[in-house]
Image 1 (cartoon, protein in one colour):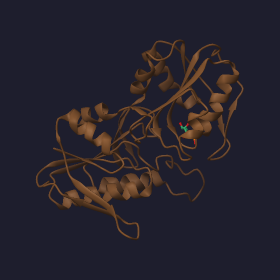
Image 2: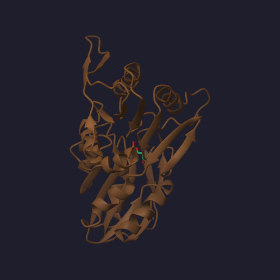
Image 3: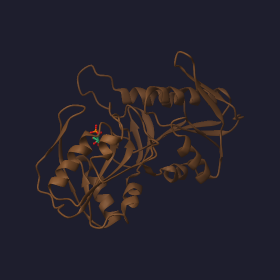
Image 4: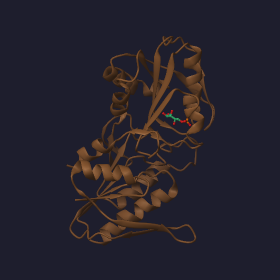
Length: 285
Ligand code: R5P
């Protein structure tokens, strides 16, 4: 087996290969003068099972994944598995308005056409770990929340886990079980892609170290507004753990609003203190 680390998952791919005890495949990636993505596979893959690890934050990363999967098949790989730790476009999983593209389906159908299996981590539209069928595409979803909870387990004096909305309550409950503390949720109302409001609600956080867990941080609106409410309610500290650090407007606006901010390496950042490499290497055995 060979693990190919795409350019958006270079360190994660290396960790997965190390954890699985397999070699990394070699590629050369570049850009053409017009910005188009160039990929060349340098390893001999004939008859080999190949695993491509590439998060798809941004269209270039997605194109790189697609053309890498395809060339590996062209070169005679016996099997090509796609591991997409952060699956871009996953939030377009429904027709929110008539005529809208169901982008998540299109992307997954395209990856499926070029690979033998698809795995991802905390896919936005899948609430739990397991194997799912999404519009005819089979995909495996891994859950990194227990790892994020584990990271914080010995770092907070008086922890309380907070879900930013009711939809994330089951993750918060599980995480609170791992840490051994209480949990609660906030009432979030989204006004637009960038604006959210957190409704007033009685919370028992005074003097406690609140830990907000969310699957992803994009604009940061959810976390910034949640942190304001928790501080107003007297939380001793506001700590944040997310799986996917998308940070569409950069990390700094969120970092300055909270006491501690951590994400996993599904998207590689300087705050990626939690690695999903173990989760991924487990499914390659
Ligand atoms: C929402 O359902 C998600 O769990 C996140 O809370 C949301 O995507 C975060 O987005 P933002 O950082 O833009 O508020």
